[in-house]
Length: 232
Image (tube, rainbow, N blue to C red; front, top):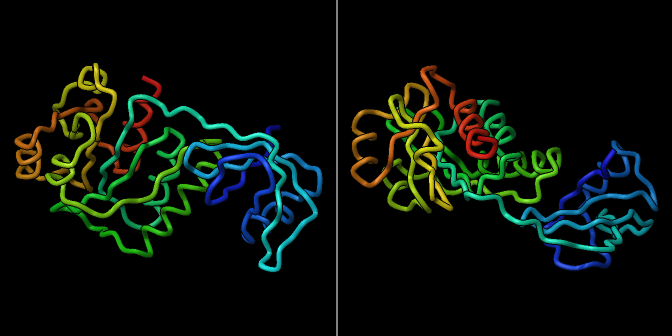
């Protein structure tokens, strides 16, 4: 079994790093690790270190990990920037959990005409935590924070790489992505984008893409799109 992963705010070199109290509690409690046990440390920015647990604790509860080597993982291509309506309740957590293993370069919430869930500071902070937990579970070195909420047309105008709007009748993903090192994928709310939103996004340069004839819930559409791009 591979070593358990733990998060630190930054990691750039070997030596002693301190995992915060909550991570230390999980390591020593739920994982039942002790001095000399192997762990993996990551910072969510691609830096990963192989280390061992020590017996050093700080007054704030942090635990010292002796990192013997640190490396930087390469980024997957194409870079995928996900601009997505956020579903209500626990489904927002499911969206983040299921997308993070496929390494989205960024996640931007969309404020759509048919949106029922709007982003708040508390929700964004919760989803950031869920993103890190998903990275730990999937051994994904790259995490990303949840960006500020924007309208679909604004997301297209700010798109990195080619903007792709998920909507019935669109061309296949692989055809639309051909030759592009970065894409921004827009996914709408329950009921989809309005006709006005689709027209405005296409006028701003977005290309319509599809995932077949079935209608998917937001979180499933997001993870399906990410998996098609990464595993295609």
